[in-house]
Image 1 (cartoon, rainbow, N blue to C red):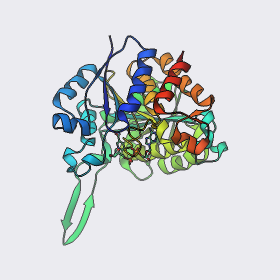
Image 2: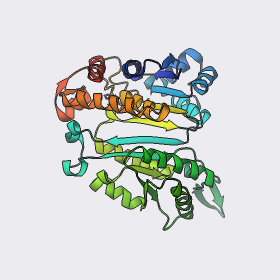
Image 3: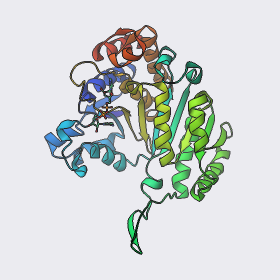
Image 4: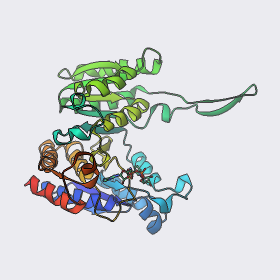
Length: 353
Ligand code: NAD
């Protein structure tokens, strides 16, 4: 029986996660869930942002559903002791090397986008970002003193195995979607990108049903604003993915709607909303639970390979919005009948049938 470790975390984390878990129980009653602490609440109760025992259980289940971490209470702590270190440790210990961030414009929310409707209609893309390599980790790095002149450097470096495994994951994702993969690069000036493209080309023949294109990162950044509907799966090295996934997210216009997944091999994954713990609205039943519920859809799709159940969850969220319901964050940009966190969760579950 599949097991999921649920880490609700801090602030609105427990509120949105409760609704997400209720959706998971309804759509997949055979999946077992168990709870543990992460973030500030884990620091208070267990002395660390994630305990060794929680890491062990995360490794054992392989699947983690997380809420959010952090809050003003823990802001004064030094960086190694802060709540978000719990997240970083989990990603590292589970070797989650791919970050998946979908950006889909739900028709009922087109007016929430800061872009004109003709630029956002039909947008449904997935950014696949390499998460554990590239310039964020490359050596040498740091500051130097050379002949009395200060300087600083970072290194963008990729091994072929690192590129191959993320490329295969992106091709597989494209195969389950609209079969189009856009590889983002800057090969006109960076050797590491020319090498990355070469490896992607080597993987391509294993996926003859997926159409592959290479696109310069600067051009991609413009296309995202003008015609994002042309993209299906977008494969990026760590640095470009960090930037483009936030740009793509803004197309949808609402933080409370964005899920994400960090994936490793052998079905391991951590699924969480993109938003933080929103201390300003915590405990007031105002949080939008849809990003957490859509994270359950990602868990079903990428963690459990249950594509049909994943679609049903997304359809239920779409129906909730088409029926005119909005949590207060969405109502402020697109009107509608305002409901609280718990009622929103209940209505999505009713739409699930
Ligand atoms: P935030 O995402 O928590 O909030 C930004 C704004 O968006 C706030 O006004 C908040 O009320 C609103 N918001 C966020 N999620 C919402 C939701 N589901 N429904 C309705 N409104 C929502 O970002 P922040 O304020 O910069 O950070 C607050 C805390 O969260 C900090 O401690 C930060 O370190 C932490 N954080 C955690 C994560 C994570 O757990 N992955 C990510 C980002 C920030």
